[in-house]
Image 1 (cartoon, helix red, strand yellow):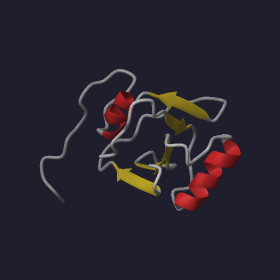
Image 2 (cartoon, rainbow, N blue to C red; image 1 turned 30 degrees about the horizontal axis):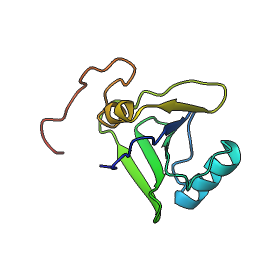
Image 3 (tube, rainbow, N blue to C red; image 1 turned 30 degrees about the vertical axis):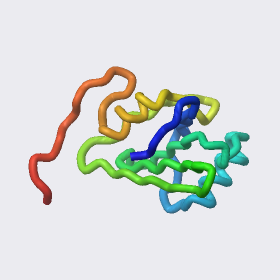
Image 4 (cartoon, rainbow, N blue to C red; image 1 turned 180 degrees about the horizontal axis):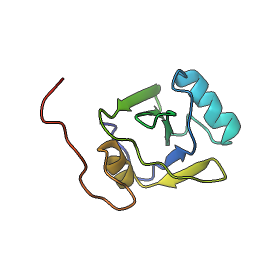
Length: 115
């Protein structure tokens, strides 16, 4: 899990993002489209078109990290916003990563076996 320090903000890129993008092109997207510093220590969360895959971009002061998570069932709940970016709390990010509705937390389906 990503160790989120106090004061770190979590930014969600609304809409969908091309999940073929790597950390360099996502960092460039943060810098140019959102007018934010991708090296500032905040987390930037992107979702693919299908809604089953997210990527999180994070710079810890030493280097850039790219975290990816795919849901086996269901979709990540995503905000709709005109400005292209929404901020959430680190606790809400935790719910999001668990596949729980971060707007109204409730446990969702959990697989019983692999395969």
